[in-house]
Length: 336
Image (cartoon, rainbow, N blue to C red; front, side, top):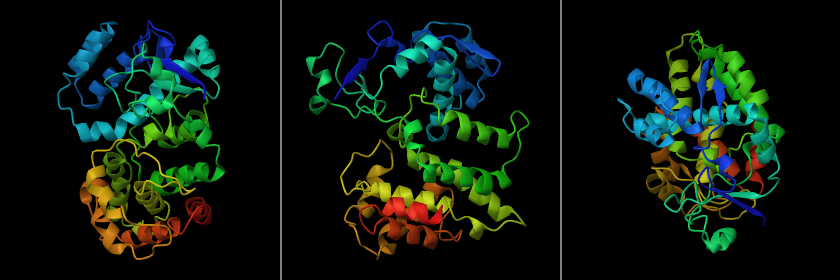
């Protein structure tokens, strides 16, 4: 297995670091690094115009990081729900607008990218750039969530691509309020046809799966509530969003579609939800008592899925996904 290591911007492969100087535009704003972009977007997200202006006024990444910690009104749950798409947008801009960096990233090929951050055992490998064990995956002390298969590769799967399209265009778009800044349909068009397929977008499924419990309510719960408030739309017409919920339940089992165990990405709710599904195995069909405490949790989904009329359908999908090896792929193909 070929391993390419990186950490600080002044070290080998430093161009992958968020602190690496890389000028790019996002909208009408110019940024000097991914760190500046991320902290600026964080400040804007919570309406702190003062900190946002201070972040743009300096290119010192250490100062920028410190300013990011001072954002007023910061809500960890909300940030966990939106930061992935924000990081996605920034990395896409960085690597698409800097041809030299784009070329270097592409040249890594199928290598595993290892972030050598000693204190970071989620995104990094828990080892330094000087540790001789950094090239030996069996000796890593962290999960290295940034370093594996790019999401663009996963989205080569036509079923997954169609699922994203159906949820976006057919189930989500009818209740999206146009903010006036960007056309919602054009935004979905860009995500589906440009951002996700971009091979220079260094984001991974493992990273996207991080903090899923904090994202479901924001990304899908609000859609369900909008359907409930609508006098013309019916919650019962939502067939693919429950498929996502079922997929998350299946993910929590920690067994992939080939029957092999894998490590779950970090999530503050894992200790709460995983015990409910821990003893489920392939072929189990009596799952209600196990999953009901999860699917009725309004803190996760924004609504009680049973009261919303989607709990039973989610259970049905989950049972089908739990049928055996290859069942997840088969269930998605059946209903998408």
